[in-house]
Image (cartoon, rainbow, N blue to C red; front, side, top):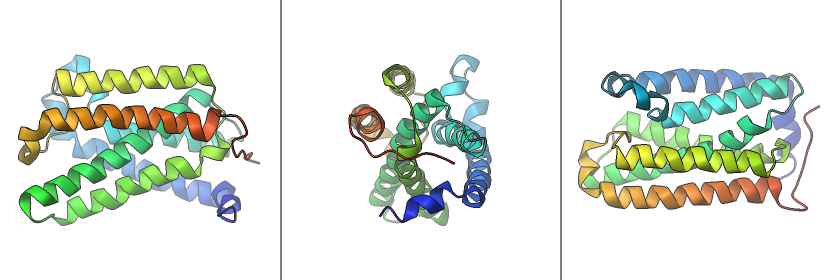
Length: 197
């Protein structure tokens, strides 16, 4: 598996990944456009979950291209990319289960969001965040869950409306798992560590 890391650290590959993530981020904000128009201004920053996660990773890649680490953004990236990557995969599979079919956009969302979660983990050896960065990220992430499931600002899948309490419960524990992943891959002693050169 370690053979992949020289490729991940290659500047040409970083540029390619940066472009892909910028395009995906822009598409994500456009996808949320109709919901953002109906969102009270105070909640706007918390509604577009996945594109904001990929935006964090865009900044991580910019830092890597500058041969730097921006630890708080790295913490936000690994936790939110993994969380919302897995969340979207599960939600679209639930849509398939509820409707018996999934359109091409749903299929695309499954693959693109799974890729988000994977890239979060693949770049973990290059991250340099500390406990306080992860604590701030945990507060951001759990606060976002409150906004989504107390104020009902979550992404709208009308065919799953009757399952919102269960989805909220699943999402809370997915947040906890995602924060734990941030700890396991970046903060724990003797973790696998690499440098961007």
